[in-house]
Length: 272
Image (cartoon, rainbow, N blue to C red; front, top):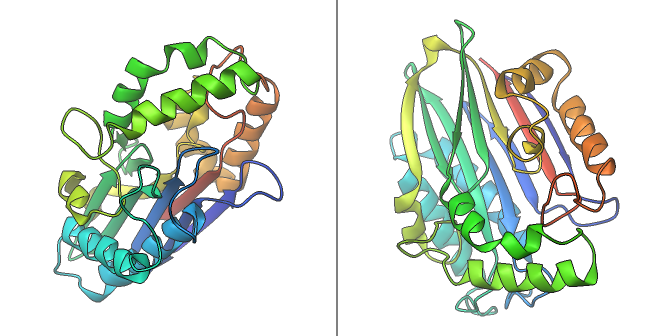
């Protein structure tokens, strides 16, 4: 397998809460999340949670090829929980969470799992491109974030509105009518989007955090097909460079309202 990978924190010197890795016939990408400016109840932090969950998940996926990906994710969440439930408050509202994208190739089939607002980009050999994203988080966010988008990103008023928005969002996490994401409860894995695709039909598979998909789904400066072309010709580094260039051109979120002026960005491109 030929995999190229790039990941950058939102700003130099800041901890990167994204995680991505590939193993034998498998790959994972996670985008960790907490509540900005709030205590998480976890002494380890969001970056530790996403990296630990991602590493364990990749290991389980490759060690147990017959086990469904949702079951692998549930086992990984349980394993992470056992590592810190005695030292951290996992019932805390702002306990660390993470999106998850996972793929595994075996016996002519690509299995996939998507939970949260990271994306999976499938490129067919006939030139078609399919983007798979769990829209439930975005759908809930659109109902709640009107006051956030009306204010300049980074302003004191924006920070207050953003904190209120994220608090309301947390109240809808992992419950019916809200959205589902990997956290302390392994049952969240049951709500992931899963499926299979014939390997013979695919040219490449790309795993993208929402910080890397902003050109398409936030800024509307690119299409999924154009994103795939950049990944195939110039690689993940160039895709993230273009995201950073667009972010720098609108630092106060007036053209593109958003919670963060810059976001952790990660892209993993796997040519089959």
